[in-house]
Length: 556
Image 1 (cartoon, rainbow, N blue to C red):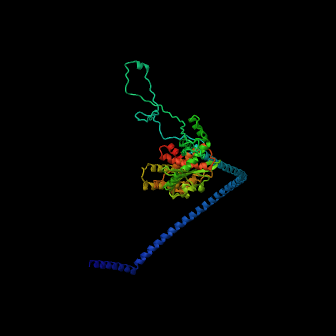
Image 2 (spheres, rainbow, N blue to C red; image 1 turned 120 degrees about the vertical axis):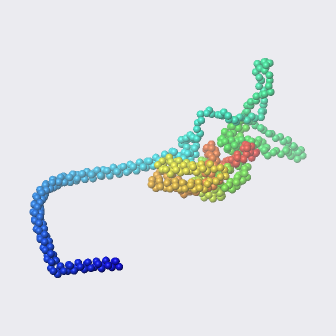
């Protein structure tokens, strides 16, 4: 209600004001005031316009004056510019002439530089070529038993093999508190009584005790032991027949040598790597010249021993064939002055067989245990052996040597150092496990991951800096380790598998000693007999307490 009253009151006030304004317009007073105000405004504007016109005229006059002054300045500047332009044109002409001369000199210098660059490129090419040859020759000279498969006996400069022992400052020999190992006393064959000094016998104060000091002087004496068989001959007067008792097998000829002499000569020649002439001379010297054995007989002992052990050889072949893990390797030999090869197959337990072969590769594998083997093969990076067996483990000792060779000849690369440390760590971890223990899967997985990381590092390094054409051993090693990762880490997954092929290497070393002594063999058959005999000697040495006695019984 109040709002309506205020609204109506407001409308009434507005209506009164409008009526007053309307009244003013009707009376004319409002119009007069508006006319006066308009005229006043017009006069003010006209006065302002006149003022502005005067200012405009003054500004126009100033502009004209300034323009005339600028024209004078521009004329002076133009004259000065023309003088400067003439001077610069003259100078430019001189510079053009100098530029022409400089271009001529530059072209001559550029041609000279081009020739120098060509010469430098040729010299750099020759230098790179010589560096590559030098690297190749240096790598060949640095090959030894520490960084390659080269045996230590064939190293050009054989180094002293260091050991990890440290000097203690103690004197050599037995140390205080050590029980020691005294020499074992033997059964006396002769007793010699030592008389006391004469002054002791004459002095009644000295009394004999029950204590006796015994000391022995041990020696050996070799003499011929001859068993002579006598058989009386009986004569039949009627028939004229003569008859005598049958001689035993060991007395089949007028003079026979038993197994002891044969075993002595065979082991001296085969196992001790003594030449046939020296064997015969040595036995003759031991027996004061009574026994002088012919070279033909000594040479025939290898055949006799091999033929008498055929059954044992077959059994040994069968045992090695059934072994779950086998080491294999081969080395060169000389027969008739030509190259031949010796293959070795052995188990981690030590059972070993040697095989004489004229060729390497698959032809050489024929007839060996490797040909029909179905277990895990441990070998070097010989591609031939990958065709046999169910799985393979490469010799990590060889890989470490090749990595050391890469480190020496590619010092700027880092992958080879990392891989060498990783392999050492893996082998140490595996060897630290107790017998019958297994590698932890998490540890093996971590080793495999680190192995792949190092391989990727090698890939990056060889992509950024390719391998030299004269030394590609490191690059080829990286490719092989990338391609055959499983064959490098199989020993971590199967504890039956050794990490190295040292067992085969050690067995081949026995043959190499004989090869070095013999230099060359004259017969393929005799070489085969030697391999068979060495196989049996290895087994007998493991199973028999007295090797000489066992060989004597075989050759008797």
